[in-house]
Image 1 (cartoon, rainbow, N blue to C red):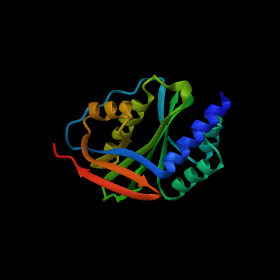
Image 2: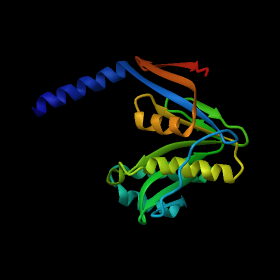
Image 3: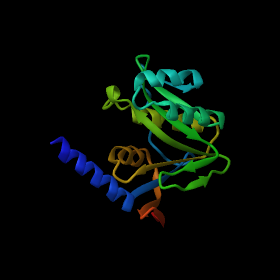
Length: 198
């Protein structure tokens, strides 16, 4: 059985080197328009993270947080991006990043942000905290903070098959504005951008 699994895994990797496709959806929220957010439960905290918190993230998931990921997170903080932590009963259950300079999409496109715009990205809920609504809380509180700090627009993105993110964004009131498709064929990338009109 292990031999069969090894063969199948190698075949999958070879196929991905020849052909690979991802689709990403890009959304926009006007903070001066209508949107829906809920109040934060009393046992949940939304706090800004620092470099000192990176060690706590490693403790949450040592496999996910290797040296490369921690270095990437340190680089983000050095570049002025902000890390926010969701604590449930004092324990980190989720995090989300906020960028004010550019939106970095999974398909490999970087979109410059104008003044008054925020890009929310790389939100992750740790396994032990799934199905408790922490991703929604992270999104609600990020919106509340952006509005308080005077931002007018928020952008978010998710891979097409991430139906949980899609449901949360649509229920809040985000508008789908673009769809990106990345096709990698024999190590050459082709990116297609489609504007969505409402």
